Length: 470
Image 1 (cartoon, rainbow, N blue to C red):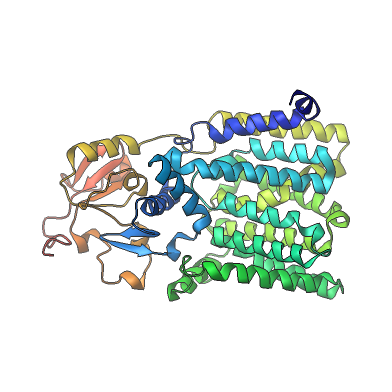
Image 2 (cartoon, rainbow, N blue to C red):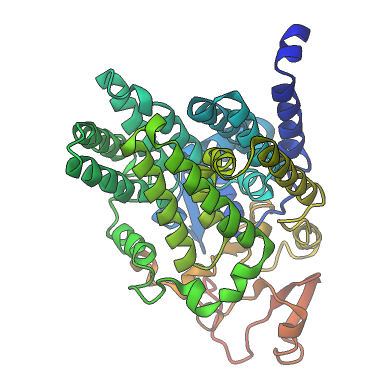
């Protein structure tokens, strides 16, 4: 063991730092938030025998396409909850394993592209990057999806040697989509690589067709649990894929360009993406034209997706991670090797200090006092809870109904008969309302619970509460 660490001491050091960042404050940093908590609700339902379902008031939506993540995210967390009982930290244990697997896959991928030095630099950039760790620790699909994608890319150099490797590559691509629906961007990227190979008379075009077929065949068995058999699934995909009918295309540039002036976006779009594309071009002869086209296109598609959505960094993260192994190569192509090493060290140290200082994600745990008070004082009060980070922590109680705020913003035909707003269901609603917004409510309508969490009483002329006459 000692001799191995002497030879591989940089890797041992990287593993130690990775373990520190991946595990520290697992249940509290970042705090449980909307999507993370929604997926934990489903995982808890699975673990406690209520099926692969999400609550919608007093009903359960089984195999919901609303989630946009698959069983590869939900079931591992459900297993841990079943074994150890529910807590945010317990639900996140499988995500730590996904983080570690992604780090190892990235190291192997970067090693194959540019050797040991490139692998070490890439791993250090990845581990120290706050958005990677803080997106990976919650129960979300981005990092598990990236892991399957990297496993596929690791097989690229072998797909010409055997049909078995081609099939495995397709399986990995399919599992990336099963894990996170937005990974469906791999298919237009695969199509672009196929067109380029066909135009260049590269025989790889035949292999790319096989990969696409294998990936689709991998997805098909998961179609029921992903909700793909529900007609609403197509509308959900079109809503995101077409960016709200096209009106949201490049929304960030048109509506909030100031967002791109934040440090993390300047770093990603002004440094990592350009250097990554330069390194990708330089590595074209090593990885092959089809491989390079696929990566370049997919990273660009994730950039477009990010610019056309709400400006969340996790939408950009897959493209960022895909280009990361090529950043040291791009930097060395522009600068002397020693200077590039100094700059990479600066990047890693700056990222590490940023993350060490709990930046890049919220650390507050406002939900805990609210949960404690609800459990102690409001067990007999029938209410609608719209904050998933509250609902997932509460014990089972027929008086507490969950309704995601998304149901007030979008139409789901399966639940047209259910009341969506407080004016319809006439029940108290638990929401998180900022201090300035609380002042907009009439006096006496808000009952403070804890910090920003308040119980909004229905208006006096509201009808009978939902379920009262049932």
